Length: 221
Ligand code: DX5
Ligand code: ZN
Image (tube, rainbow, N blue to C red; front, side, top):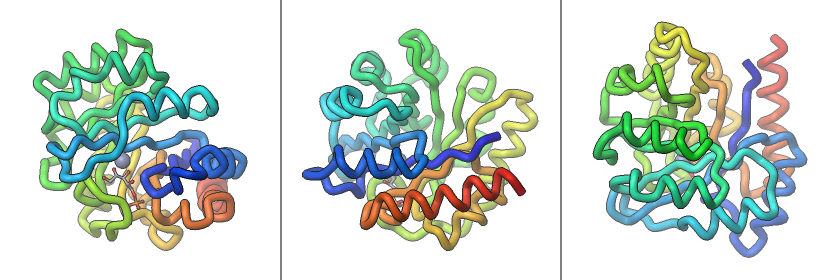
């Protein structure tokens, strides 16, 4: 499966967002990872529906919206209509995960499921027959620029096993603390979508190109 880079705009310079997104797109990134935080499910606040809507108007990348909000079901329709392509929800935040997945599908989007580092990976198993993407968090959600949790590598392996067992072609995305120094470890564990924020946006074009080199070579090995 093709390995995909998903730069997280949490680390972007908002005043130059359009320019920086264009740089990562030209470098070969296919997804744009958008972290939505409500100050309740996670301590931080980030941005909401109108930011996705605005990015959609100027960007043809796959918009990968990571909802770190309580009861994400309330906002699925709004993010779908704003132009999200993938909507990922936390099991810990949903009232009814199956219902959230079917709502996401009903608006023509791909559905992602994820868990915080403290939730056992097996908790996602019952949703793998309907979700399109499984996201493993390699930091505690809420902040960019944290260090990769070494325990995440084993959780990625476990997730890859569960996907294999499901017999379905889900994407396996990993998010948090990924740099050029540990991205191979994450790929080796089975990830195929790599989220990275702070290791990209200090020099978006060059850093995204360096990640893409690793991802493309990895696919060809
Ligand atoms: C953390 C977010 C991440 C974050 C990643 O809650 O979900 O997507 O932006 O940023 P880095 O790569 O800096 O850890
Ligand atoms: Zn994220």
